[in-house]
Image (tube, rainbow over all chains, first blue to last red; front, side):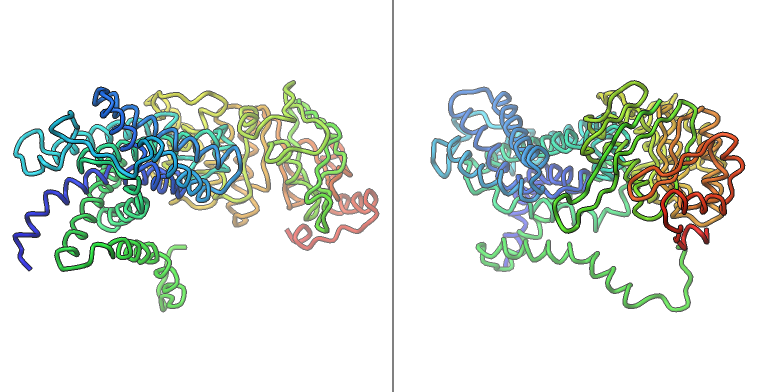
Length: 308
Length: 264
């Protein structure tokens, strides 16, 4: 085990972590703000890349292609939202249905090929793995940080608006929302659209970064997103109260996740076992609050007074 | 004016659990009426309020609030006409949001929510005054999360939220039942003050006969989904618990057996 190998791999891990951090912020919006587990992301994490790469291959402008990727992601969120609100299907199942249908749709977008390459020497791309060791503005870490800052800024503004507040309230207390005249079907759909739009942006950037889009690139995305959210809460939960800082913490959580993965790989784990490891880590962290509650129920404080 | 005509609601229709919750209910409230609603468990009191609020559609009949037929209207749309406080203090507020944010949500009831700021500076000073009037010290904790408040404080806040935009009709659904007696009395006094100051048309469900007699200008009693008693004016002022129980026996042909009502 050579430490230099690990250090050499770190810039890549950070860049990937930041790109997945953008996706994790999308997951945060549904999972934490809306209190809704949305599995659409496993599909939309490929849709954004597919749309963006195919448009660029067809000669579209980079920024226009990115914008279309975001819109495509929002449409996937709309579909899940309609399954959930207009058809009364439980949110988790709605996401699974969209995810499944997106597998076909993503293949269709990619001319029915499982993957499509895009060469950074031939096309203008937003980020590329090749530049990960550059010490200038072409470095994907720098570019992703700028986009992340912009995204957090926009979301911070949005969730302070009347509409944004009604979205937060929907996640906090739906009955109260309806009593205060908020159409919770609308707010849920809007939240799902925003979330998946962000996921698709991340997807497009990831496709650029790795130089190809793959129909399976979103598999397990929800787990990575949840891992990032949970890591951010464990480490920064008590520290960051501000909404913008919380979003930043989620992105940092994703970076930490990828650094940990890199270390585990460096220690010699078979790459094929990575998803099993991710799932188990997330399962344990999700279980911690439950175990804590069980433990304190079985072992009450002795003689102590609590403020009930 | 509230006009409820021939409203019927059956839960679990055509199953073994079929239950007629509202049975051809007709009720008319005048603009200044403060009506207390009393009745045993399953009498249809809360169902009546939920029917007015539009929690689910009614089977038949019509509900008209201040000239607007709301019978087919969704819950969030008729919210523009209503102010609601629930039995569960957790239900009326968003625990993870700040006190001032909750009030800001309520202030926008019945208006379209745009991309303007969710809360403005002028609003804050208004909230401060309104909260100070509650006398609970909440005016100094405006950015505290509502989840940190006690049940009584949350109900007081919900009451403020329900009335911050003057509603055409205020619905209080046993809003003091989950509180300790002292807090319950305080919240009731506060409710009465707000209702009188704003001259609100009010329906207040209660399990407590004394409260039902003490508050409001009119009392209705429900049993098995029907309004079986409607007393107002001088007659209501003369009411006692004994009289009320006799009236119940006469109207329903049963004795009024409900420990919770007798003891409270």
